[in-house]
Image (cartoon, rainbow, N blue to C red):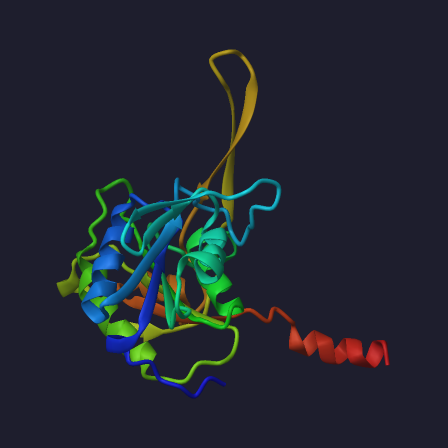
Length: 260
């Protein structure tokens, strides 16, 4: 258990994402970070890296570009960005906290296993750094509104900085697609799972060649209670602690008897 609290006014904050260095959500998260601390670094992918999960680039060298003071892009994945930032780009001392996002779209339920936004926070946790992933859900094809994230993210971060964290833990935050005045509170909850899975569509391209296109989840509906999916569907902001130890402990106890 990490018993420290973080004084955000003195903290070194690293901001990253998976939508790319020019994404509007990154600019907003950078603005939020600078409202909390003067020591903010930005290291984000050169191009969009959505759904890259926790992947590393191992078969080619990475290149970084300095875009301004304490601001860099990396031609790799979100995981690459955090790793390169920690070991090469962020000089002097390591970040106290990593903020990932704000993602253009939710990262709820099984999204967590695919998300580059969450993966960047995972990498930070592996490096012993506190990390929070932020995502703004969408209302269909309507233009995304960032006002809710802008209003609530600073307060959420202040509260998270003031508590103890377990080792190898990160926090996943999702904002509903509602204006701030209609948000129904901030609720801690567990990771959920959708009742329906991902759609896969077949088609034929203009050249007559068949293709398979992996689509979106067919529904965000979940029968689980107090999950990130149900909280956001109810108009709340979900705050979910995630842990990197994937061991299924009850089965491990059974296996200990089988393989004793």
